[in-house]
Image 1 (cartoon, rainbow, N blue to C red):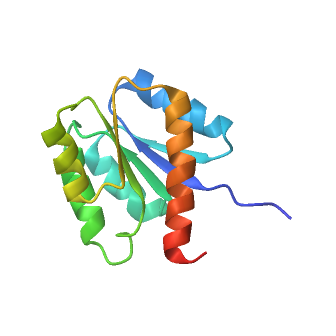
Image 2 (cartoon, rainbow, N blue to C red; image 1 turned 45 degrees about the vertical axis):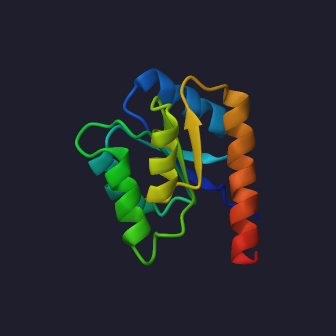
Image 3 (cartoon, rainbow, N blue to C red; image 1 turned 135 degrees about the vertical axis):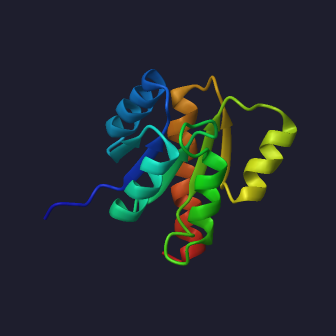
Length: 132
């Protein structure tokens, strides 16, 4: 019996960062889908229904704040955990990201070990909230 890997969508316009996240998360056993901009991200979210989204705020086409808003407004997709990973590092930025509906907020540059720990913790917290 094959166990389904949890799917994570990484939305990041900087190729080097996107690839580091992809390799790191795949190394942890996750199925990783990547998007380079907000419009592509929304299409992939609808098509793939990932179990978590790692979302940069400063994206071409549509910024991460708008992607987060649209996901949270959707009755089917609205419960997907979202971790913002961004260069926006003021308290006001953090406050805005969490107010938009992000479940976690990480500032660049980041340590990949921290991302692994936060992803695992966010999955655990989400499972408890769903009663799984």
